Length: 171
Image 1 (cartoon, rainbow, N blue to C red):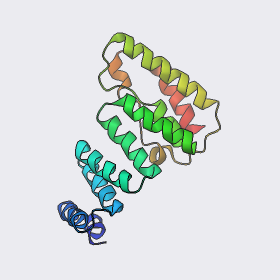
Image 2 (cartoon, rainbow, N blue to C red; image 1 turned 30 degrees about the vertical axis):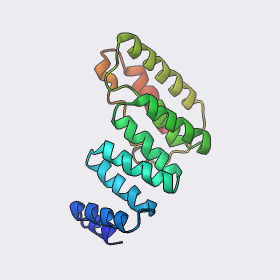
Image 3 (cartoon, rainbow, N blue to C red; image 1 turned 90 degrees about the vertical axis):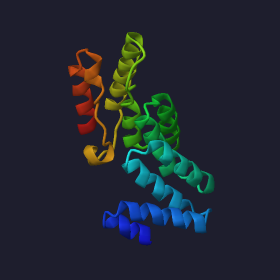
């Protein structure tokens, strides 16, 4: 409770200390691990956040933690691992926002031109499938919170992919 109040007042160091104290006093309290993980993620301490999420998941597995795993691995550039978490969630929940997030996964630094072409082809297939699927997205910015940021770095014509992505979001 106190840690959450510190977060609301933007006292992040105090909140982190309080979450850690809570964990020391009650090591089986999953929400403290989860909240500390979220706090660490917000400061780009992804590896530390993953440790907290893993502890929380062992104590109390939730879909939100699976989504946190996917997001964390995406931030680390481990898009195959992120994809497996997104796939598990999509299979389990069918949520449209997760389908779109999964479709938008791109390697931060592709290993080769072949990988670039392969991931672009997969992206085009995912987007063309999504455009034919009835999706319930009220606010794409809030629900998806993703762009095709790494696409222009591939040095290819992105116009059609960007237009298709826009259609998916407006669909």
